[in-house]
Amino acid sequence: NLRDSGLSDKAGAAVAIALTRAGAAPVKILKLGHNRDLHLETTSALGRLLASNSKIQELDLFRCGLDVEACAALLEGLAAPALKKLDLRNNGLGTRGGAALVAAVQRGALPALEEL
Image (cartoon, rainbow, N blue to C red; front, side, top):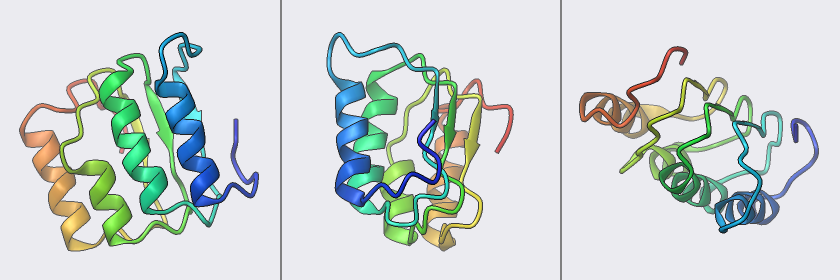
C-alpha cells in the first residue's frame, strides 16, 4: 500500500516499471491514491504494467492529481483482463479520458471490471 506516501511522478513510474519486470512479485492490488504528484510518466508506465501483468485486480489512483493527458495515457489502449476495480475519483478525467474509458470497455479490454 503506497497511498499518501509522497511519490513523485518519476517514483510512481519507477514502481510500475519494477512491477513490470520479469520475476517481480505477483501484485494483485496496487494502491497509489493520494499521491498528488503522479502524472503522465506514471500513468504511461501503469498502462504498460496492466498490459503485461494479468494478475492486477485493483488499481487505486484516487486523488492523484491526474490531468486529462495522464488519464488518457492510462486508458488509451488499456488491456487489463483481471482488473476488477479501478478508482480514478478526484482526478481530471475530462472528455478525452472518459472517451478512452468507454472505448476500453466497449472493446472488451476490462472484462472483469466490477467497480469503477
